[in-house]
Length: 130
View (cartoon, rainbow, N blue to C red):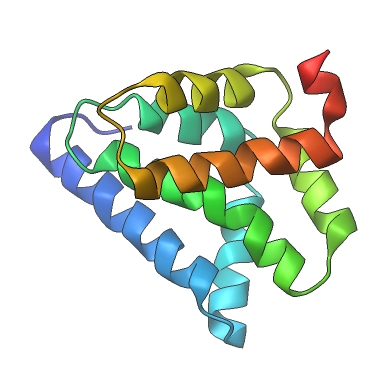
């Protein structure tokens, strides 16, 4: 991954792109989202970006994480959602969400996105909470 301001700007653009695609119901947006969901370390990457020092990157990463469950549930694809959550292979996603929820600097919009992710993990991956 590229560092520095250019890398941060590109990360922000990519995340914004995913947030928009996750809300769009067009076929083109669907193929973009399906590309994102192929990322084998998706959960880990988003959690790392939620800790990013560049203002805004953390919020966008949480938005992506929070919108993924809604994207699947809109189409009724519960199996697809379960498959994606299974990629969140360790407890880092849950821990990352909980850490950010405890952070008093996190705004209500980001908290809502994080809660959606935690709720989905609770339903589809209850073993994370054991």
